[in-house]
Length: 158
Image 1 (cartoon, one colour):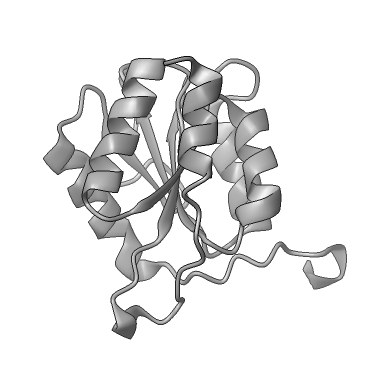
Image 2 (image 1 turned 90 degrees about the vertical axis):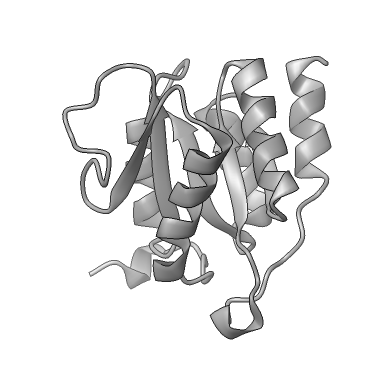
Protein backbone atom coordinates (compact mmCIF):
# COMPACT_ATOMS: atom_id res chain seq x y z
CA UNK A 1 0.00 0.00 0.00
CA UNK A 2 1.43 3.40 -0.95
CA UNK A 3 1.82 5.89 1.90
CA UNK A 4 -0.40 8.47 0.22
CA UNK A 5 -3.13 5.84 -0.12
CA UNK A 6 -2.85 5.09 3.61
CA UNK A 7 -3.39 8.75 4.44
CA UNK A 8 -6.49 8.93 2.26
CA UNK A 9 -7.81 5.63 3.56
CA UNK A 10 -7.67 6.65 7.21
CA UNK A 11 -8.70 10.27 6.75
CA UNK A 12 -11.90 9.17 5.02
CA UNK A 13 -12.99 7.62 8.32
CA UNK A 14 -13.20 10.91 10.21
CA UNK A 15 -16.44 11.55 12.05
CA UNK A 16 -17.21 14.12 14.75
CA UNK A 17 -17.23 12.78 18.29
CA UNK A 18 -19.10 14.08 21.30
CA UNK A 19 -17.26 16.20 23.84
CA UNK A 20 -19.44 14.75 26.60
CA UNK A 21 -17.44 11.95 28.28
CA UNK A 22 -20.63 10.55 29.80
CA UNK A 23 -21.76 9.27 26.40
CA UNK A 24 -18.64 7.12 26.13
CA UNK A 25 -17.39 8.68 22.92
CA UNK A 26 -13.81 7.99 21.98
CA UNK A 27 -11.68 10.73 20.51
CA UNK A 28 -10.39 10.68 16.98
CA UNK A 29 -6.63 10.16 16.93
CA UNK A 30 -4.26 11.87 14.50
CA UNK A 31 -1.33 9.51 13.86
CA UNK A 32 1.78 11.20 12.44
CA UNK A 33 4.49 8.72 11.44
CA UNK A 34 6.80 8.73 8.43
CA UNK A 35 7.44 4.97 8.47
CA UNK A 36 4.57 3.35 6.57
CA UNK A 37 4.63 0.06 8.50
CA UNK A 38 4.56 1.75 11.91
CA UNK A 39 1.87 4.25 10.81
CA UNK A 40 -0.38 1.51 9.41
CA UNK A 41 0.16 -0.70 12.47
CA UNK A 42 -0.72 2.12 14.89
CA UNK A 43 -3.81 2.97 12.82
CA UNK A 44 -4.93 -0.66 12.76
CA UNK A 45 -4.47 -1.01 16.54
CA UNK A 46 -6.45 2.15 17.24
CA UNK A 47 -9.20 1.40 14.72
CA UNK A 48 -9.48 -2.14 16.10
CA UNK A 49 -10.18 -0.62 19.51
CA UNK A 50 -12.93 1.60 18.10
CA UNK A 51 -11.07 4.86 17.60
CA UNK A 52 -11.50 6.96 14.48
CA UNK A 53 -8.08 7.63 12.96
CA UNK A 54 -6.52 10.20 10.66
CA UNK A 55 -3.04 9.40 9.36
CA UNK A 56 -0.26 11.65 8.13
CA UNK A 57 3.34 11.08 7.05
CA UNK A 58 4.67 14.38 8.38
CA UNK A 59 3.77 17.57 10.24
CA UNK A 60 2.63 19.41 7.11
CA UNK A 61 0.12 16.67 6.24
CA UNK A 62 -1.07 16.58 9.85
CA UNK A 63 -1.75 20.32 9.88
CA UNK A 64 -3.58 20.06 6.54
CA UNK A 65 -5.83 17.31 7.94
CA UNK A 66 -6.56 19.38 11.03
CA UNK A 67 -7.79 22.28 8.91
CA UNK A 68 -10.86 20.16 8.07
CA UNK A 69 -11.09 17.89 11.12
CA UNK A 70 -9.82 19.80 14.17
CA UNK A 71 -13.11 19.50 16.07
CA UNK A 72 -13.08 15.70 15.90
CA UNK A 73 -9.43 15.12 16.88
CA UNK A 74 -8.80 14.68 20.59
CA UNK A 75 -5.35 13.11 20.53
CA UNK A 76 -2.16 13.57 18.52
CA UNK A 77 0.07 10.49 18.38
CA UNK A 78 3.31 11.48 16.67
CA UNK A 79 6.78 10.17 16.09
CA UNK A 80 9.44 12.56 17.38
CA UNK A 81 11.74 12.15 14.38
CA UNK A 82 9.91 13.30 11.23
CA UNK A 83 11.07 14.83 7.98
CA UNK A 84 10.77 18.61 8.15
CA UNK A 85 9.20 19.77 11.39
CA UNK A 86 9.79 17.25 14.19
CA UNK A 87 7.12 15.80 16.45
CA UNK A 88 8.04 17.93 19.49
CA UNK A 89 7.71 21.12 17.46
CA UNK A 90 4.43 19.89 15.98
CA UNK A 91 3.05 19.07 19.44
CA UNK A 92 4.05 22.49 20.79
CA UNK A 93 2.44 24.27 17.83
CA UNK A 94 -0.78 22.25 17.97
CA UNK A 95 -1.08 22.56 21.74
CA UNK A 96 -0.93 26.35 21.39
CA UNK A 97 -3.57 26.27 18.66
CA UNK A 98 -5.78 23.48 20.09
CA UNK A 99 -5.30 23.57 23.88
CA UNK A 100 -7.72 20.71 24.59
CA UNK A 101 -5.89 18.27 22.29
CA UNK A 102 -3.81 15.65 24.14
CA UNK A 103 -0.33 14.87 22.82
CA UNK A 104 1.54 11.56 22.81
CA UNK A 105 5.03 11.43 21.31
CA UNK A 106 6.85 8.23 20.43
CA UNK A 107 10.43 7.50 19.51
CA UNK A 108 12.92 4.69 19.23
CA UNK A 109 15.60 7.04 20.54
CA UNK A 110 16.10 7.61 24.27
CA UNK A 111 14.04 10.43 25.73
CA UNK A 112 15.38 12.50 28.59
CA UNK A 113 11.95 12.55 30.20
CA UNK A 114 10.33 9.63 31.91
CA UNK A 115 7.65 7.54 30.27
CA UNK A 116 4.82 9.47 31.94
CA UNK A 117 5.40 12.83 30.32
CA UNK A 118 8.03 14.59 28.27
CA UNK A 119 7.21 18.20 29.00
CA UNK A 120 4.25 20.46 29.57
CA UNK A 121 1.61 17.75 29.44
CA UNK A 122 3.02 15.95 26.42
CA UNK A 123 3.11 12.22 27.08
CA UNK A 124 5.75 9.79 25.82
CA UNK A 125 5.56 6.19 24.58
CA UNK A 126 8.89 4.53 23.74
CA UNK A 127 9.32 2.43 20.59
CA UNK A 128 8.96 -0.37 20.05
CA UNK A 129 5.53 -0.40 21.66
CA UNK A 130 2.92 -3.13 21.91
CA UNK A 131 -0.75 -2.75 21.01
CA UNK A 132 -1.57 -2.84 24.73
CA UNK A 133 1.00 -0.13 25.51
CA UNK A 134 -0.41 2.17 22.80
CA UNK A 135 -4.01 1.64 23.88
CA UNK A 136 -3.14 2.10 27.56
CA UNK A 137 -1.37 5.39 26.81
CA UNK A 138 -4.34 6.65 24.76
CA UNK A 139 -6.72 5.71 27.58
CA UNK A 140 -4.41 7.39 30.07
CA UNK A 141 -4.47 10.76 28.29
CA UNK A 142 -8.10 10.84 27.13
CA UNK A 143 -9.91 11.22 30.48
CA UNK A 144 -8.16 14.58 30.87
CA UNK A 145 -9.03 15.81 27.39
CA UNK A 146 -12.07 17.73 26.28
CA UNK A 147 -12.95 17.65 22.62
CA UNK A 148 -13.25 21.39 22.15
CA UNK A 149 -10.60 22.00 19.56
CA UNK A 150 -11.71 25.30 18.19
CA UNK A 151 -8.52 26.95 16.96
CA UNK A 152 -7.41 29.89 19.04
CA UNK A 153 -7.74 33.19 17.27
CA UNK A 154 -5.34 36.09 17.72
CA UNK A 155 -7.89 37.95 19.87
CA UNK A 156 -8.16 34.99 22.25
CA UNK A 157 -4.49 34.98 23.17
CA UNK A 158 -3.71 37.09 26.24
